[in-house]
Length: 139
Image (cartoon, rainbow, N blue to C red; front, side, top):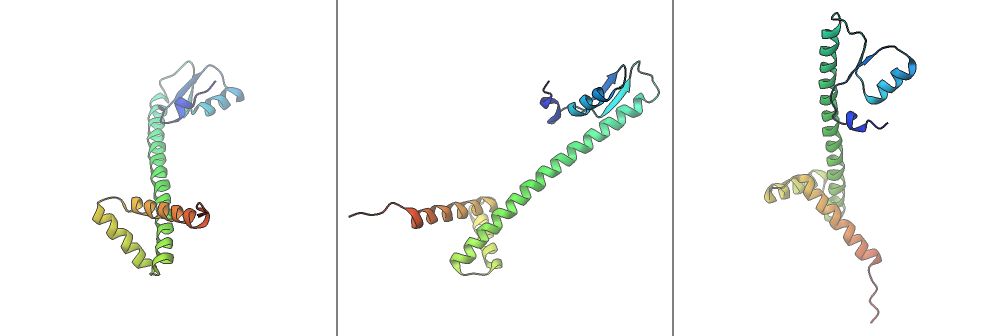
């Protein structure tokens, strides 16, 4: 069975089982179970299992969100580095000047600096294609 819908931002899962065996535990882990309770459920340990599972779920969600933010930041930094490299090469300026140029353009246009960087990179790619492999004029 496919339980992908449970894993992506799914609810915290506590499995209730009648018996333990390796296959059952493997399947529970594959589904994303955070705790396993044995049936019949007893009051002792139930509250701590629920609280621990909810806490771990919240912590996992926070870590996942943080990971996504960091991934976006890395992509953003790569874009900025590439755009600065292009500006340094084409404009014969220093790195800090390239960054200030990107920043000032972003502020002037009131758009994120990453958008300016993307435009510069895209423009460079288009110009490279035109210069290196554009259609030949056969007049």
